[in-house]
Picture 1 (tube, rainbow, N blue to C red):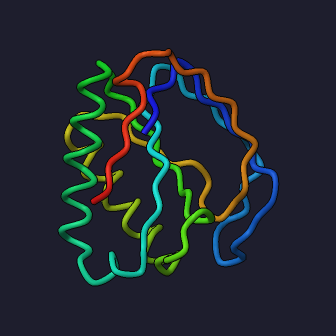
Picture 2: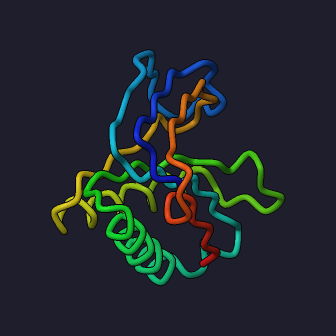
Length: 132
């Protein structure tokens, strides 16, 4: 997770045909951006993974004094990938729970490689790694 003073993205290439066409980019200010990979084993423990994700996102957002959270799929770096439909479903569940808890949670386009621009402060709580 990286707390960003500014996070911008633009879709470059679609990598998963089953997901909607997205052509517009986006921009967020003062947001926690979670670079998330789901692994094959996570598919057997959906509810526990969802709960841990929400807890960790809330904790990290609080540490950085923000209510804005962005979920970004980073699965292309993983050796053990969950099914993309499972991952998108998990992201939707987490986004819904975060929004119901008075956070402003959104997702970057799923199934795309994106050009990203990150402006993050050089403070320790701005960069957090958590394996769940």
